Length: 136
Image (cartoon, rainbow, N blue to C red; front, side, top):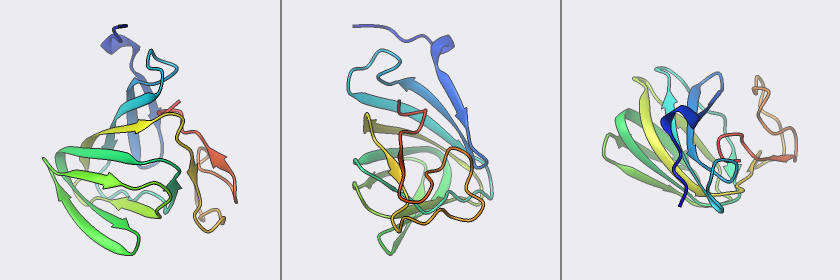
């Protein structure tokens, strides 16, 4: 079983967060990805969906998850199960750190096939599906 050293963790940045990939198919795993999300205070992720389930465990801070029309308040120690193909958006007032696991590949997409205004360069465009670099 390969060992992935701290120095080999890969970082990806968006306007809202830094993702640090600990394991993925391009870093020793064959089918799973594990990464850390550090979301900045006052940040809001885009409304999007993923084509596979994700598990988010919050280590520090707090967040609000909009998931399929419901709002969920999250704090350190909570785990959020995000079903596949469900529209979601995560926001935070104070910032948070979470560890996330998902199968790889997992693709992000716009649930209504419309690119949100101000979407960053890594976001899917229109009906496109993209493999985020922290999952690859």
